[in-house]
Image 1 (tube, each protein chain N blue to C red):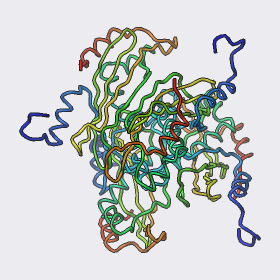
Image 2 (image 1 turned 180 degrees about the vertical axis):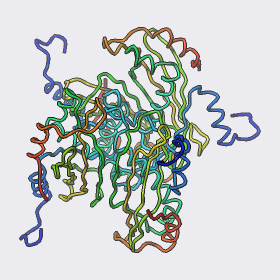
Image 3 (image 1 turned 120 degrees about the vertical axis):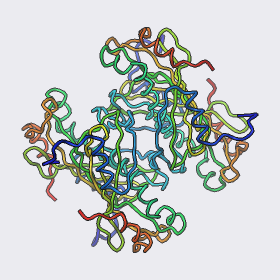
Image 4 (image 1 turned 135 degrees about the horizontal axis):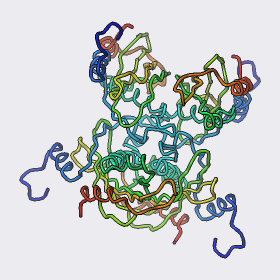
Length: 156
Length: 156
Length: 156
Length: 156
């Protein structure tokens, strides 16, 4: 934002966010997601990440592949940096893009944008492993999935 | 629906639902809300009800009254009849209207409409008691709240 | 309690509770189950009910029957009356007994006992329907389940 | 465990776990914590971490300090590596010890031990920042908290 003549509005920030994250989902913050500190509880951010992750799996064809072949994704690790407390009422956009892609795994980046603030409330990532549910072991990423993941890749 | 020349589409059903329930909130079903039966877990329906309830409290001025005076609402009882299993992906409209209004309490009716099916997935109600948080006891419904509740009332 | 020489202690109340409810599960209240009102959120009580329900299904052999034959239980309706706010830290005992048993359904009663207070924090019930998952329709209660349910029955 | 004449039993593994983690909480896995993959959902592991974190805050006196002075802890970041899927029925022990302690923050390590398997199901950590809720800014760790944290410290 530095060097701009004026600060961007929350709406403009949300638009800018969507331009960076190729897969996004809008989610209304539920009152009941707040905890005794009167902020959205930390585990709910991971639910927001999950919602974007599942949407991304659908986009790259992983959901249908898994149901047909038993070759699917497994979340091996995830993390989150909390930058802004969220409160009800608000709507967040949970977004994701793909980072490093390995032989049998890849990194998915997440961020949660608060519409109320026009600021990113949390950022994180997940490491997803390519798995053969039937055999119970990791396998090389299926070619068709790798191709689709490349379309959603972003190098920081 | 009997006697109609054709069945209403899901979109028409959602519109009809909104005409009945004066307070409604649209909520995307999260994948993670499904349980091991691969349906949305039963407790999540009560979260959908709660989201409509909080929205209704805001509409009638109960949220601001409670923060100013300490006179607020308490959920004393609630129930739900499950009519349709919900699955991801779907969006629901959670709606509410007011039923019987007593001296110190009132009934709030809930329903959750599935956009995917164009059918009501669950119905229920809650009994809300007027409470003085400071004194720790129930009190007559504040007049300004009663007036607003009357606007959202519906006799079955 | 009226007529007793002294009030029963919380521990005695928990013991008395266990004598009434033939299926019980002890559950530590999690801090994160409290909401912005700094009480355990209403939907969590239904999670406590569910935990007792699943335990009861195991006790009567419904879990193994469902996995073998596809004849299983479905929760058709449930309700809860909130009598006492729960706060962390506490441990609750969630208990259940069987009420009316019909041709294709039965009633399960629930209660949640707070160890901290030695008092029942919530009561409710569920209507459980006997279902053939394969055929997608309700069926008469399997005889072996009915027999077991009778063992856990209590007439109020 | 290498070099041992025999494998340790699950119970022995849980005992060994308790010897490493100075703050532990036992938590029964709820059936309803499983998702459509029929494993405990990823966000629930962070709830298990949180339960151990809150217990640790109480142990070091942070809970009472925060309520008295407004000097309290804030979770700035957290991560989890999933090593074993959890399923109902099981009981987990969620444990924590303190890692690096800085001027205004410290690291808390977490792990979740499955009693069913006698194996660690997940490991992670959190970065906790010392905060003045009233002033809305981070502050040096209060001396009495730092002293208590040192007692729970473990160098890997």
